Image 1 (cartoon, helix red, strand yellow):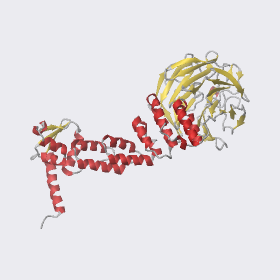
Image 2 (cartoon, rainbow, N blue to C red):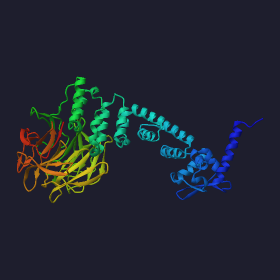
Image 3 (cartoon, rainbow, N blue to C red):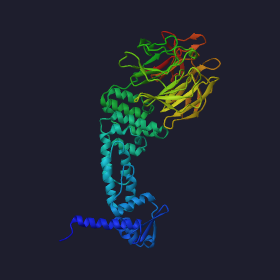
Length: 545
């Protein structure tokens, strides 16, 4: 009769358990000491040699460590070395998603093949949309072919979801390119959006990489509507190479050549038409009515998000200091155009504020609450339908300009309650921090601001008199320079960009309430009067459609 397999396994476990307790306790039979971070660990040379090719080589080959009683293990922190020793003696170790790569690194370093295989098996079991990019990078780093294959499969099957992961924004260009190559050919629109977001995440370093990534897209598979949206993206529009790539795709697919079909703006609220919402066509000069606002609003702000118009804040009439500004906002679905619906109240009542859209958030800056001018700011989280406080601006300001350029918020000029401002500041959404940028050459409030072809324009306003002057901010140079002046000085006007032209609507000049709409074309470097609105418009808000 011979011992069974279970008997032999039990015998082996008792011996290893005894030796493990010996190294941690009496150390009667230990013949080596490992040292990490100043801590000593007594061990048995034979056990380590059997469990680890690294230690077996160290103890067998003519190396310095072969004759040292104390062997330093500098590459493995002490706590992790304890876990490795537990595995060497007992085959027991806790591996989690958080520590699997540390354990694998230690297994790689100590050449514990069974432990490395265990880690790889575990990684293959837990690969998901949330971790596939990280595990893919780890797999490439350690030549884990099975892990790379599994993560590639996960990426291909869940590509649209993977694009939304924060790890996606941290990829270098080589990994980004390789990830794009894994995509199924049914998600080109999502891939284009992901490329744009990736470039804009660090635009100063990545903008020059856009063309190569853009060239990987199968643009011919996109619908004509999506092609038009691609054409409107500034990274495409400002690149001759991208324009040629897009044109080639259009010709290949027999789609109509993309044009900027947007030729309308919506003029909302303001003095003289507190509830009105009117759409103007800049080509036909014709107007048509949208449903009226629920509340009178003047000195309000607005944003277009997809097919929805949002109006935020304001007051009941333009002498706002005699009434309390609103916390409330309203939303109109342009597809239905039935009625304006209430949206959640802001955290702070405010009018004369500014607003900008960055991804899925409407940012609202400064303004006045009826008692004081504000430096406070907040953002509306559209998917979660709630307002969230963000850090204050460096200066209180109202009647200022607010624009968005490459996922940063810019606040220009304004009034702080005692003086007109020339100061300007930029908000970084990633760090939730405001920083000063170059000041205007001429302080002004009641101005209008827009972005056109990578420049910020500060237009008109008031400074001891009504202004016709215009300044242009070159973001890369952090510098304001003089641009062409308006035909008519004005303050309290509205501005938007339609068809790559700047439109200035209404405003005030002294006691005169203005109807005129001026348009600026870069080719002529001049403002001209385009048409007039049906009624005088001032202290209103405008959005391009």
